[in-house]
Image 1 (cartoon, rainbow, N blue to C red):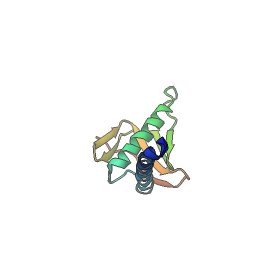
Image 2: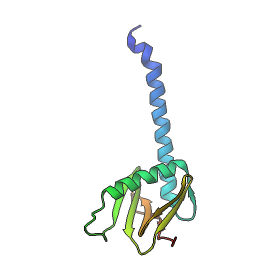
Image 3: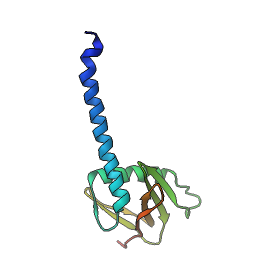
Image 4: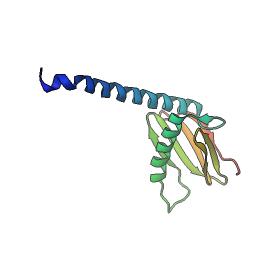
Length: 122
C-alpha cells in the first residue's frame, strides 16, 4: 500500500468536517435571511455570519459621501447599512451590538427583504 492509502482516512475526515462546517454556515445564512435581526437573539453561527457581512459592508463604505448605503453579501444573504438618525441594536448570543447612526437591512441575495432594523435609541 502506498502513502496515499495511509492518508485516505485523514483526507476523508477533513472533507467531512469541511462539509459539516459549510452546512452550519449555510443553515445560519438561511436563518438570518429568513428571520432577519429585529426582535430576536442571533445564534452563534448567525452572529459570526453577521460579523463577516459587517466587515464586508464596512470595508466597502465610502467615507467621503457619508450618505450612500454600503452592502456586503455571502452565502445568499445581503446586508445593507444605511445612514440613519438613530442607532441600531442587534441582540446576539455574545451581547448587544450597537451600530451608531446606521440602519441595518438583511435580505436574501435574490432581493426579498427579510428584516429592517431601523434603530433604537440607546
